Image (cartoon, rainbow, N blue to C red):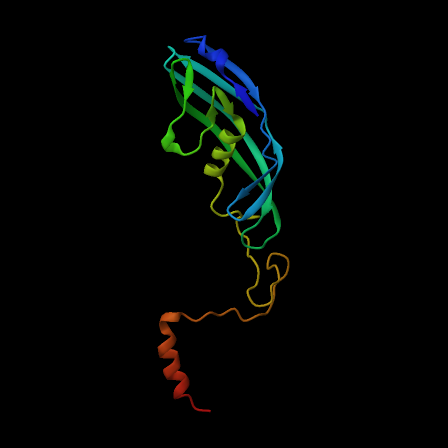
Amino acid sequence: MKLDLTFLLEHENQTKEAEAFFDLSEITIGSSQVRKLAADPLVLTFYNDEGKKLYVSGSTKVTYQTVCDRCLTDTEVCVPVHISEEFEIADDEILYDDEEGVACIEENHLDVDCLVKNEILMNWPSKVLCKEDCKGICPVCGKNRNLEECSCDTFVPDPRMAEALDVFKKFKEV
């Protein structure tokens, strides 16, 4: 959704609120495609500071469905979205900072999807787990260790001790 912000340029030192809608039903995070399940309404507050700066703020939360990084089962992730942006105003036009790399303002129109997506990417957890003590998948047989235990030998020797183990194997009596 794009919001036309030209009406804000005429109202210096005033605060306006607007309910904004965003699509983002599916987004790609890393190499995973995640699907939106629910989102709270997003109410944005705009403040024109003496015709020099435009402040945009608002918050919401969005719930996405993705897979657990350890056991690959479907899980939900609730992502808080807190928007707090500042834009320059010059010659009755809202400008954006070229250094940030993503232009969420174009010709006095605010791209709400862009703004919310940036916040989701910033607040996405580095590791998504179905539960805090997720046991993951057995590297030998591939069973989900949260559902059932397996009797596979998962011992992985320390690679720093590989040469010492070779010496013991060489002189081992049969």
